[in-house]
Image 1 (tube, rainbow, N blue to C red):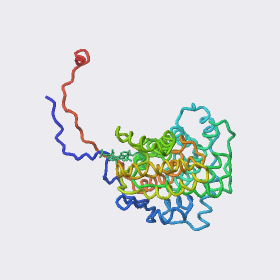
Image 2: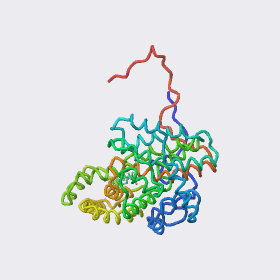
Image 3: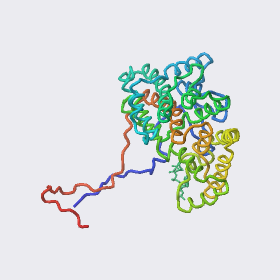
Image 4: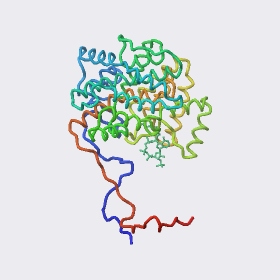
Length: 385
Ligand code: COA
């Protein structure tokens, strides 16, 4: 007779509410719809600080002085070149390879070329952190341009991280409004508590694996449509709907079929995601500027209908879609933009994990049988159909 597992363990589906780490980096207040980076309310800082200041804040726990910010920004921009072998690898990948998969592969391979790959000291990790944050935008831009058959561009030392990403990708100098919005987009995506990809990064770091491996895993987690991959799906849905007048019928049909509306709902926020407020505003402004008013109108109509029908709110991915589209970024690259920004948060969490590490090794509630009698292969019978 098979025995039963006698252990009493509590299983929490999706680990909702389970505390997996202590952190100073960011706090998501789901009840009040607030997000804090190192204690600063995102509403107070989002439109005031640059992405490089945000990176400094997340990595150091305080905002930089002007000199410190200029130094970090130029150090990162000066590290943006990637090894020619990685460019060759990008050329070999078939065009149907999703940019997030290619990005994960490239980050993993960049680790092989990193001069300090095997050095997990805090000092080496600080240098690797800057290199990674610098090289990810170049991988994204190069992949896009290779797929379009366009020549690759070098970063412009006069620009920062986000405007260089946009410039190297599109090949045109972003105007002031585009630079502001691109930087805001990256500020808003930089960190977000113990989300799935950050947890992945911390689990990998906790085994004392290296920073490149932790980021490779995090990119894989972010790719999924329940996480960062939602922004691409949002744009596909908006384009498929095509006209404001068709929104009601389309969304009603999806809800009737119990389908999830991408860009809505959140595990932690029970009210509006604070990042959506900023992105909604710039989606409206940019869409109007670019003659894409209907795309914003469709989004806004979706928001009204979903809120009314399900009582759920847009998350960061919803208005990020029309913002990125208006910036000229192709939908299949939307999630890579999220990754380029979230790399700052992942790295902060990896460093925090290394600083006070204990292997992350949870348990599971075993629901199978125990002590089954072993049957040698010659005596086994296939179950009856
Ligand atoms: N569209 C329709 N219904 C949704 C929904 C969505 N986007 N998100 C949640 N719901 C509904 C669920 O159907 C469920 O309803 P029910 O209780 O009537 O069955 C309820 O809200 C709770 O959903 P649940 O799956 O338990 O929430 P979760 O915390 O596990 O999931 C997400 C969180 C983010 C995965 C979920 O909201 C989702 O799938 N959103 C769409 C993908 C997305 O935008 N991801 C980016 C997140 S930043």
